[in-house]
Image (cartoon, rainbow, N blue to C red):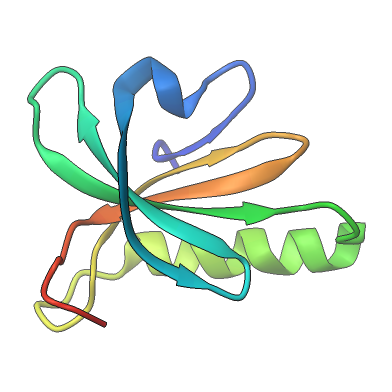
Length: 99
């Protein structure tokens, strides 16, 4: 998929992270970001990969591919994914009205 990026591609190449936390969860915070080219606002959720074995990582990557293919008005759209050795960042539509 052209929206699932691995190194050397970086989230920071396309997006500017803002110092605004939209929410927190078990695996980390959801932060607001802006796409550099359009200045559109998005949300980014980061998952730490420390301690995740290869099979679980593959399972997570498969789930992310499925979510990337979804397009429904009642489901937050996953725009892009950035994977590094340390974590996975999910760039999603920014819905600031709550969970």
